[in-house]
Length: 136
Image (cartoon, rainbow, N blue to C red; front, top):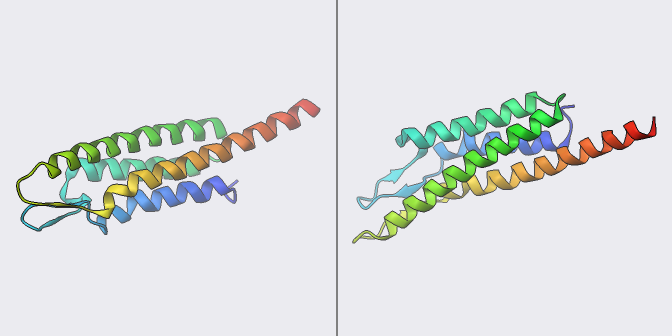
């Protein structure tokens, strides 16, 4: 059903990864130019992929197991993106002039938290359905 709490969590992930990376800067280079997700093709593709996986998982509300698997794939995608950002920030900090990290680098962290909460709610629903089937 669409009125479940995990739908809210997954729509929050879709909003976080589909809209916010293009408004919030990811980092600032040494020249003072702010870098957004639209400037980096790979990063924007991964953000769009994560948003698409979240929307697909919302649509799969009738099949909770597939929804759970889609969220796990989305968690892995966000972990990859987070690893890229950590690698990038470690390279940025070694420069001779100071560059700044943007708030957009935290988007994968919030996405992972919301996806874990959604998976926990999906698991709770699945356990409830299994317990009702035992009573029949």
